[in-house]
Amino acid sequence: MSLAAVFWIYGVFVSAELAMLHVIALYLDQIWVQQAVILAFALYTPGILVAIWRCADNASPFWATMVRWLTVAWSLNTAFILLFLQIDLLMRFARG
Image (cartoon, rainbow, N blue to C red; front, side, top):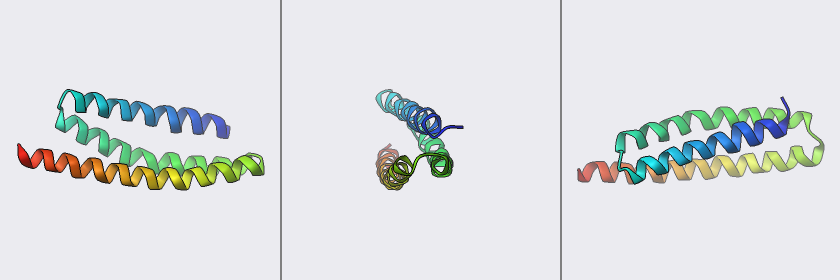
């Protein structure tokens, strides 16, 4: 599969859909749905990041380097976002 397809369809589009599900659950105050989406995102992200990294081997050197740097940034960003969303969710759950 091409790097562009993996990056844009499986990476960006699916991640955006998961983020939108979380926003909808947040708006509707569905704590358990938010927790499920956070878990799904945490399980999905490492796999797609590995797939993107491996697909970079088949791309031109410029795009391979660009995508690998974006993958590192993406992983750090996702880790912090999931951490802070989880902390917020735990605090809201503790308040009742």
